[in-house]
Image (cartoon, rainbow, N blue to C red; front, side, top):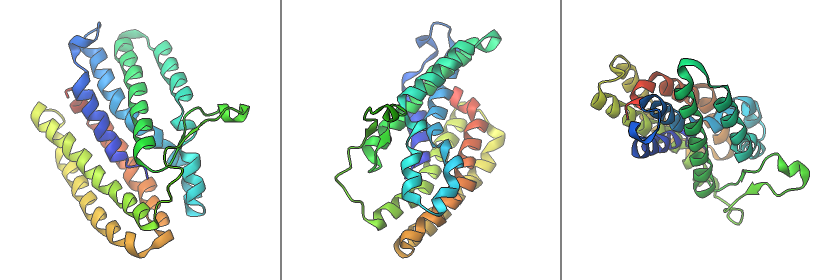
Length: 240
């Protein structure tokens, strides 16, 4: 399971803890880019859900394996960071270079959490596997996760979305940013609690069908909502 909300929350906490304007030679613009990059980078490896989404309807296990490949590779991460860094120019140069570094840091935080917490591996050296180089890192290969536990982890997606939104709302009130969006964010947050309750119950009754019910909502509604909230709250993230 992805727990995108937990990834976003972790990225925001890291950004708040380690990035200060005085820590960057170019000052506040690079610091803002670093912060937003950390948060977006913590979320962005899961965008391949949009490409792989239809596969979850037929073979969720294969889709999850492919999910943690090209977007979970330190090699593709290095390429993306390098391209953004080199292309950054003009008035936004400092912001974009800070964003590039933060994006790389956020993606790395996502990869570490996936390896340690989600009971499945990542293809962290993709695409070197095509050249015969071992590319999978899986600390949990020995463990067979019970179906109900996997389902409950899926239900927890909505819990962590809600906690991520609560964190952003509290930060917005503290910094006086994004005030006009807080009403809608409150609605989105309450929606997460409702879906968490519903899917927690479904986790015990749907068995293998849970993946279809969960990923349909996750891919079509709630992960896009999370990305939307993150972009709308970027001024709050800058002010963390």
